[in-house]
Length: 87
Image 1 (cartoon, rainbow, N blue to C red):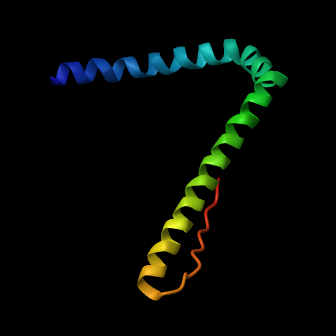
Image 2 (image 1 turned 180 degrees about the vertical axis):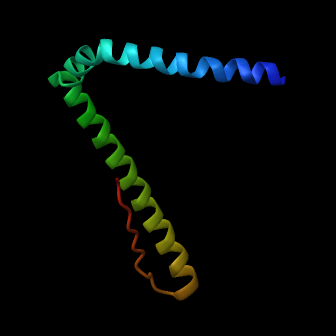
């Protein structure tokens, strides 16, 4: 990218930010109206539930696989403990 192109793009950035702010403020009420609709709240709960089930399935599979490896190496299964947190 040439230096004059970089300068031109840097001049447009404040304009783009201003347009983004204008659009966000103009649509804020409508966005929250849809976001708070019970239908979408249920959809979010289903999504988070699906994420939890996927993580649980992953960790259960990991625990089972590690128990098999532990049996091969130590003749008894050692307990695998996994901690994770969501922010």
